[in-house]
Image (cartoon, rainbow, N blue to C red):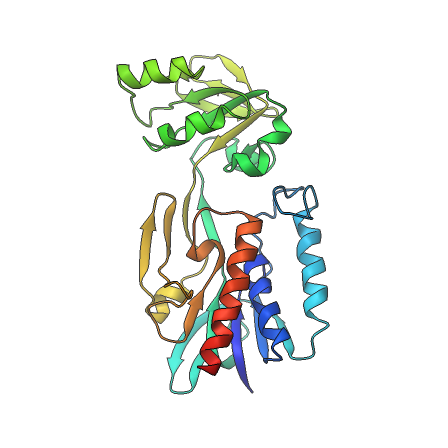
Length: 293
């Protein structure tokens, strides 16, 4: 069967794109590995009309709505390879299935490389976060710890003062000069130079000197990369952002491989559910137009 579009990734961006295409009565195959990036989070915030809703429920509801369209084929599985062909694209899945589509849309999301700190990964999405707009309000203006991973932390730390009493935990990532220290002190930011031994309790930072610093929540920057190697295998150009690596796309969400598009966290910064949905919706429109024109 030749699908009009194969969407790899059935999370928020992929489903938002698929919805536009289905409403144009196009035959759409969604290949979904079932691993949402925000699977560790119990509440999604900042998404109009869904504020505070379990993100898993948002995804379930969206999928149920997509399945009402008869031109949808939903495949639970992992796409392992993608190739450009004369009539479009061939996508191979882990069960050795081979699927053909006129267009390909990559909405695979990204992986997060977390700082190597004991106890951090277990608290990711629960008391350790990356986005203050998504999780800052719920900390109720309490003590916030920002774990630095490099000098870029200086661009974020002042922003975090909108949500609470901020401590910049250097953890050996860099050394701010006297001018920066004075500026941060003037904005009420505390600088902690001690090395982090681990994270305990809810969000208690244990330092190597034995001190324990309790926080309402912790934030840190991760390094992002596409969650699968499909884009690289296809020959899509990548680009570096302050957050990591993403797929390069033009204004119409098309990659450097003609007929292959990308959307969501894998193709834009910054990241959130609402931004992924919006990016997916516009990508779906552009993919549809490419089939017509």
